[in-house]
Amino acid sequence: MEKTTRNLQILNIVTIALMIIATALVFFYAPTERVMGQVQRIFYFHVPSAWVSMLAFFVTLVAGIVYLRRGHRGWDMVGSASVEIGLVFTIMTIISGSIWARPAWNTWWTWDPRLTTYTILALIYVAYLMLRQGLEDPDRRARFAAVYGIVGFISVPITFFSIRWWRTIHPVVIGSGSPSAEGGFDMTSPMRLVFFFSLFAFTVLYFCFLANRLRLERLTERVEQLKMKVLSA
Amino acid sequence: MRTESIRPVQTKTDYWSLFTDYWRAVGAVLGKDFTAELRSKELFSSMLVFSLLVVLIFNFALEFERSRATRENVAAGVLWVTTTFAGTLGLNRSLAMEKDRGSLDGLLLAPVDRSALYFGKALGNLLFMLLVQAVILPVFSILFNLSLLKPLLLVIVLLGTTGYAAVGTLLASMAVHSRARDVMLPILLFPVAVPVLVAAVRASSAILVSAGWEDIGLWFNLLVGYDVIFVAVAYMVFDYVVEE
Image (tube, rainbow over all chains, first blue to last red; front, side, top):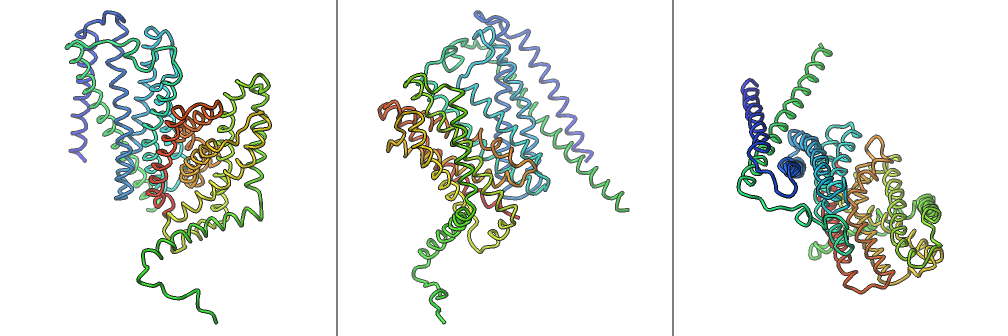
C-alpha cells in the first residue's frame, strides 16, 4: 500500500510537470500560424484530447474482453474508469473544437462525418454509464458493461464510414469533410515538436487519471469492507 | 409403448445430429414465441397500431401532400423511423415477458447451447417486425401514393431489420435487467444502430427515386457487412449476458 501510494505520487508530479511544460511550449515556443493566427494553438490541446478519448475507449474494449475471459473484478474497474476519463476528454475535444471552428469555419458546429461520429461515440459511452447505474448486481453490471463496451466500440468505425459515404454523395457546405479542406495547414518542425510533446503529455495525463481513479475505487471498496466489519462486530 | 422418440443418437451422424439439435432448439424457442403471440396478439397489435400512429404524426409534421418529390425523399426516412420505434417496442416486450413471468430461468435451464436461445429470440423478433412491415408497406404505399413494394426494397427491408433485430435482441436482454428498462433499450440501441439506419434510409430512398445500382450497391454491402459483424459478435457474447 505504501509503495503504490508513493509511485502514484511520483506519477502525479511527473504529469503536472509535463502538462506545465506542454502548455508553456504551446504558448511560448510554438510559432504563430500564418493564416489562422493564435486560435490555431487550440490544435495542440484538441487533437491530443481526441486521441486520449479514443485510447480510453479502446482500453475499455480491451478491459471488457479480458474481463469476460478471466472474470477478474479489476478489469471491470479499469473499463468503467476509462470510460469516465474518456468522456471528460471527449467533452474537452468537442468544446475546444467548437472554439476553433467558430473563427476557422465560421460556425460552432457542422454535421461533418467526424463531428457526427464523435457525437454518437459520446452518446454510446453516456449510455454505457447509464447502463451501469441501472444495474445493482455488481457481477451482472460488470458483464453487461463489458459486452456494451465491446459492441459500442465495434460500431464506431462502421458509423464513421456510413456517415462519410452519405456525405460524399451529398455536398457539405462548410469544411468539406476534413480540416485539411478548410482550415488546414502544414506543420513546421517546431510545431511538430510541440504537437508530439503535447500528445505525450496528454497520454501520461490519461494514465495518471486512470491510476488515481483506480486507487479511489480500491479505497471505496475498503471503506465498504470496514463498514461491514464494524456493523457485524 | 412407442419408443421412436427416445431412440439413441447414431454415432455415425454425430455432427449432423448436433447441428439439427441446435436448430431444433432454435425452432422450439421461436415456436414458443409464436404460440404465445398467437394466443395473446398483444405484441403484433401494439406494434402495428403504434406504427400507424407514427405515420399519422409524420403526416401532420411533414405535410406529405406537397409534391411527389418531397414524398419520395421523406418516405424512406418515415419508413425507417417507424420501424425503429415499433421495433424497440417489440424487442422490449419480447424480453420483458420472459423476465416477468420467470420463463427466462426455465429457458436457461434447458440443456441447449445458450446461443440457440439468442437465435430463437432474435428470429422471433425479426419475424414479428417483418410481419408488421408486411402490413405497413402496403398502407404506406397508399398513404404516400408511391409504390413501396419493389423487390429490391423488400431485400433492403429484410437486411436492415435483420441487423436491427440482431443488435436489438442482444441489448434488450441486457436492458430488461436494468432499473429503468423501458427507456434503457433505446438509449443503448440507437447510437449503436446508426449505421443500419443510415444505410437502410439511403438505400431505400435511392430505390424509391429509381437510382442505379452504383447508388444502392454501397449501402447494400454496408448492410450485409453490419449484419454479419453484429450477428457474429452477438453470438460470441450472448453467453455472458444470460449467465447467472
